[in-house]
Length: 166
Image 1 (cartoon, rainbow, N blue to C red):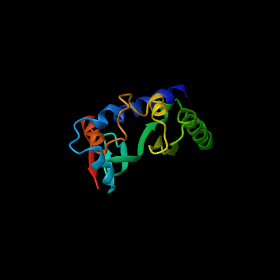
Image 2: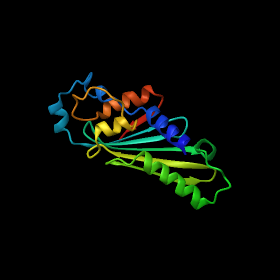
Image 3: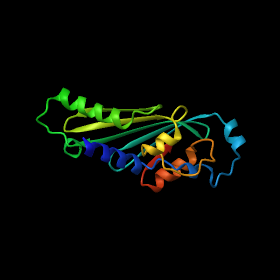
Image 4: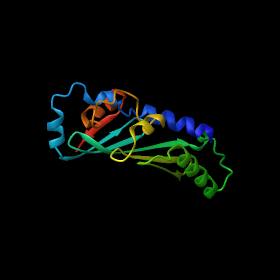
């Protein structure tokens, strides 16, 4: 299960969660204008590996992120000779211990020969410092008031994701 932790942290880092310092660079709108814009938006980013990131925002400010990705049992160190309930219990115990943070929920479910992991982050109630320590947010300057949808889109696309905003 130690391998599961290392893999999940690696995936979280590779998911391209934007650095806090990315949120206030190269913005053409002022923070006041961004705060006034409360139009709901959803951005979905997908990768070649069928990983999906969904960001829910009000204006340019991301409120929530959901990441869904799959991993083979072998990568998680899970033996296929275990019964389904034992495997499910091990998955959720590992995820709970890794992401026992306010505003973060991680669940896993078995799908044929792999595990589908769903990671949800509510940025409105999560603690930035705890997210950085857990590898769910890259450390950067803390002079931004929010996580920018536009800057996150640029970061995700630079990481190889294809993003659409609705």
